[in-house]
Length: 304
Image (tube, rainbow, N blue to C red; front, side, top):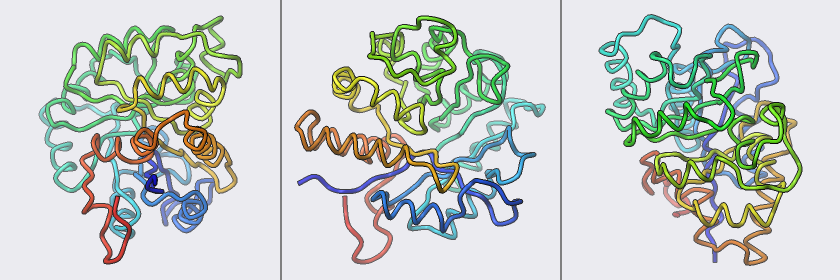
């Protein structure tokens, strides 16, 4: 029998001192977790939007994980628009890792994927063995995110130049590459048509340091648009697919739809119990260094 246990690798919250916003409070998010069977979440700060209300900082993420130690882990991040030296960046990230950060992200600074500022971050994370989760942007007109061109050439270059770094991809321009692009606009919308295998699978075959974040409407749409291809994709890259939600409002429904879809694949024997567990928690445990002890902080809690 499969273990009914889920980790959300992509969580955002509204901190206590933030102005009112659509972002969920801890209580609202945990209520959604109870409905979805999600045991733990990883809190991701949002540096490039720090001036907007309701946005989580690295300090907030750490504080909230300490307040709810049996429900949240946390990532750190940094503002690449600041004047970082490599020594200063290394010192900051090393300190954050020692404090308990499981990774770096959500990386949202608006630079080219292979720009010197971004590559410095990749290099530091590679040396410190800190996984990175990035929000990909199609161009500089997007609200936020690291920018790459169609076909992901700059991402591919960085994957090859930093083979020991672990990259987790996210957002519409990233997931659009699961299929062949018919037009540049495909990179900015959630396409419903069946998949003709695109650049994403090609790049993943050649670069075992690339992982996929299933969160948000972008990830759930990519999985549910073509069931037949999704089963092949999940089986081929079974050790690099990570379940996430990216809940930015208590009213969103896509995480529940994705959970139901993946559960149905299991029930109908299109994916195995082992693959289901990898997607929902075992891959996250392996990538982010989460032990069974980390997940079972209270006596009597369920073990994985």
